[in-house]
Length: 66
Length: 131
Picture 1 (cartoon, rainbow over the protein chains, first blue to last red):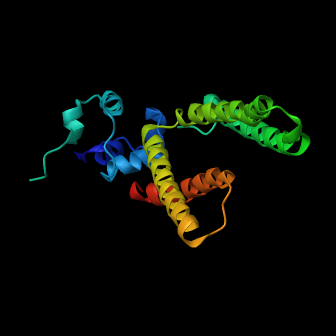
Picture 2: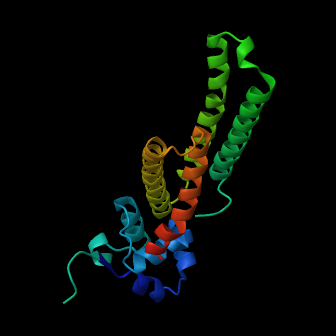
Picture 3: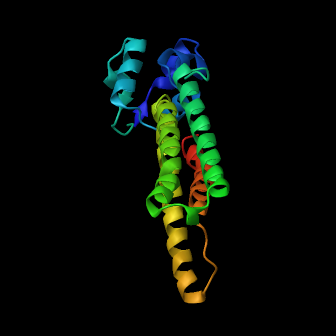
C-alpha cells in the first residue's frame, strides 16, 4: 500500500524514532510502513491520521501511482 | 515502544522465574524421587508437577509479547510458526528414520530446545523481510 508517511514526517522534521515515540510503536515499524513492506492495522492507521490531522485516505492509498 | 515497559518486564520476569522453577522441579523430581518406591498415581502426579511452572512461564511470555507493537508481534508470530513447522518436519522425519534405520531414540526433552533454537534462528530472517 502506498503512503505519504515519509513526506509528512519530513515536513515536521521528525526522525523515525520521534514518530515511533509519538505513536507508541517501534522505529522498525515506522520504517517498514514507509518502505511499504508493512501495512499498519486500522487502529494504527487512525492514530497516524489523528497525529497528522489528516484523513486516512490522504495518507494511504491502495491505488497504483499514475 | 520503550524498552522499560513495566508490563513487559513483569512478563519476562515471570517467564524466567517459571522456567527456572520448571528446571528445578524436573531435576529435583529426577534425582530425589525413586519412581519404583511410589504408586503409579503419585509418580504421575510428580511427573506432571513441572507443568504448572511451565504454564505459568508461558503466561508470562504471552504477557510480555502482548506489550510489543503490531509489527513485532507479527514477527514473533511468523517466527513461532516457522519454528513449529520445522519442529514438526524434524520430528516426523526423525521418527520415520528411527523406525526404518534403527536410529537411537531421542528424548522428548529435546523437542522444546529445538523449538526455542529454530524460533531464535527464524527471527532475523523474518525481521529482515520488514527491514
